[in-house]
Image (cartoon, rainbow, N blue to C red; front, side, top):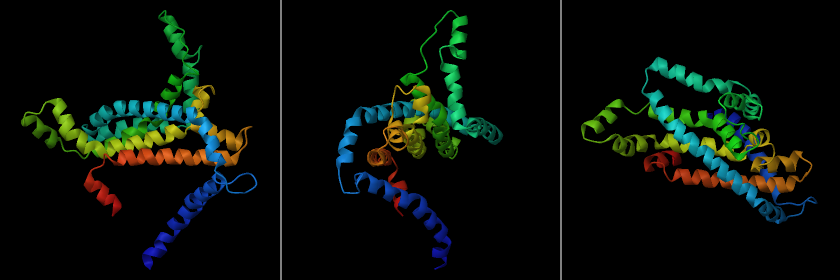
Length: 271
């Protein structure tokens, strides 16, 4: 009885801000403007399949780049002294203390045709290059904004890997690649799967980055949903259906990453 009382605030929070919004989204998705049941909204959402696939593709690229950058960086940080670890983690977290829009706007000023990067390249006799309003700029914005979400889970797992395990593998004749394959990668897999989810989910649903760095030329799922609720193409029923499609994509991503979890970890999660 006492546990139920202490859990009541969390249950109330979950009902108000998770269950009820999801129910409202489902109601709008399966109804028309007159309130009648329909599947037409999901049929119409298929017209935007290129936008959905492009969003998934760019998000996968950004997630892969984040993983390639974050994995060795997290390992290096985890092997440092405690003081150095705190300092390096603080430096990684520091940009996140700044407003998301300001961080993205800063990249606009850097990537524009008369921006700092093109001016620097001009001094070297290169460029100017068309960097702003491109898919590359959108991916760059995703990587920059969400890279810490890949580093932190990897670091939290790698810092628990004892140096003695790596040394033992080396003493037994394992090369660096064998140590990575048979020791580091299996032990760090929980951090990898968590980082992939934490980067892919906000990347596939973002709309600010694509609008500011893509110039509206490369619409993503987030832009499409925002247009249905706040834009000129006001259609909350279609927007809710697209939102449910996005939730389905995210659930698939989480299910796929869950396949790489250790069986004992899965059992612990179920318990």
